[in-house]
Structure formats: structure tokens, C-alpha cells
Amino acid sequence: MPYTTILTDLADGVFTLTFNRPEVLNAFNDQQAEEVQEALKKAERDDAARCLVLTGAGKGFCAGQDLGALKGRSDSVSFREHLGHTYNPIISKLRSVEKPVIGQINGAAAGAGLGLALACDLRYAASGAKFRMAFSGIGLAPDSGTSFFLPRLIGYARAYELAITNNPITSEQALAWGMVNAVFPAEELAAATRELAVKLAQLPTKAFGLTKRAMNKAYQLTLDEALDYEAHLQEIAGHTADYTEGVGAFLEKRSPKFIGK
Ligand code: LHQ
Image (cartoon, rainbow, N blue to C red; front, side, top):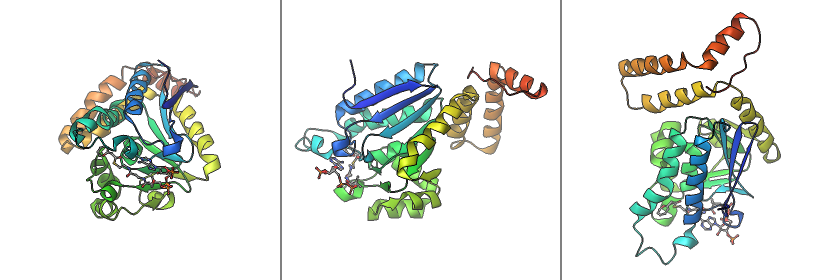
């Protein structure tokens, strides 16, 4: 079935997923949540997709839940179930897919849309984009991983303040606080992200996946456990074709050709 709420593209090793409901700043309805889950599974399975980019069509990245789509349903909908079927599996997949995921934050990221942005491995943002927790604005508490990611990225006091004041912050502030990796003029964002993504897709992406696994896991480990887990993953990395190629190329003083295996 063709997608109706997202666009996908695979070229040069880069799988790009674009949220495509620009009239509501790409706020999610159920169909969009389903399509994003399906597309991410496809990207995960496809060896040709070695780096993922997540972005939004039009002037927003993603405004979170489409509040119009929820209207009139609140009596009958369990939010716990809703989250369990929509954002939670997407956030989990973004963290578990063993390929680098770049958030190309072209415009507002709010509510669950902020969660999606923060679940990416790297974020390049447009100058002019804004980041807003949004939940308290409608009387809710954080969801979609925002309570997990935000304090880790910017510290508890700033994260809690953003949650309860619902103040938006600019890309420049997000950069100063370590929430995004770089900020570009809006018209340069897509090219800058593409350049990074294509470059990453030609590098040892299997090792990048293991790097992600190690860093995800390290949150829950003691130092000794982390050392042991690193050794376990290095055993895997040491048996890849990319390791053989990397060492061979170094010794032969040539550029390595990595295949992600
Ligand atoms: C929207 C939305 C939107 C519909 C802008 N829906 N139309 C899920 C389910 C169950 C339980 C709990 O949690 C969740 C997860 C969540 O995500 S809850 C949080 C939901 N999101 C929000 O509350 C964000 C609301 N939006 C905003 O704060 C602002 O619109 C942001 C900061 C995103 C952007 O501000 P501006 O750039 O000033 O744009 P705008 O406000 O003018 O919006 C542009 C249009 O988009 C406008 O429509 P219109 O027809 O007037 O042009 C908005 O109504 C529409 N829109 N967000 N979530």
C-alpha cells in the first residue's frame, strides 16, 4: 500500500523518511504512526539503507499528536494504549535500529514530535526551528521519551523548566545546551544533512550500530559491566569485513572501502 502520510526515499545508502502532513505541522494521526512504524522496519531490514534521516515537509518538523484527530475521542481512548500503539514503538525503534539516525529538524518539534527528534542519534536544525515540550500546555505530563532524553541532554533543571513553563526554545539555544549537533540557515539544512548522511553511509556502519548498542546500554551499567560489554561488542566488530578492510587500508596507506558488514 502506498503511504499517504509520509514520504520515503532510498538513495546513496541514505533512507529518508519525511513526515508529510504539512497543514498541521506534520502532527501525527493514527495512520501516520502506523506508516512510520512500517517504514522504519523496512529501513532496518534493508542492507542498502546504511543511514536514516528523519524530517518534516513544509515549515514544521512534527507538532506531536494531531489534537484535532483526538478531539471527541478522549472518553473512549486509553492514552496508555494509544501511546503503546503509536509513539512508543517508534521511539524504541529509533533507539534500537543499529544504523545512525539523523534528525533534520526543519521547523517546530513539539510534544511527541520533540520526542521523535530527541530519539534520533544526531540532530541538525534549521535556524528558526523551535523546540517545545507542549504537554503542559494541554494539561498533560511528558511522553514519547521526552522525560528520558531531555534531562540526559540538557540536565534536570533545564528540562523540568521547559516542561512546566512550556516555553519554546530556539535552535541556537538548543545548540548551546547540547540538544542539537549543529544549526544551519533553513535553506542550507537539507544539503548539510545530506552531505553528512551520505558520508556516514559509506563508513563502517556495522561498527556504528555496535557503537549505538554500547552507548544505549551504558546508561544502565556500572563501569565494570560497561567494560565487559564493550569487550563483547569489540569481539563482534573484530570479525567484520570492515575491520579487515580498515586495518588493511591503513597498512597499505590507501583509503578504506567499507561495506557495513
Ligand atoms: C496543529 C498542531 C497539533 C493539530 C499545530 N495538532 N494541529 C499523544 C496522544 C495522547 C496523549 C498524550 O500525548 C500525546 C503526545 C503529544 O504530542 S501531546 C502534545 C501535542 N502537541 C501540542 O500540543 C503542540 C501544539 N502546537 C504548538 O504548540 C505550536 O503549534 C507549535 C509550537 C508546534 C508551532 O507553533 P507555530 O510555528 O506558531 O505554528 P502554529 O501554532 O501557528 O500552527 C500552524 C498550524 O498547525 C495551525 O493551524 P492553522 O489552520 O491555524 O494554520 C495549528 O493549529 C496547526 N497545529 N500543532 N498538535
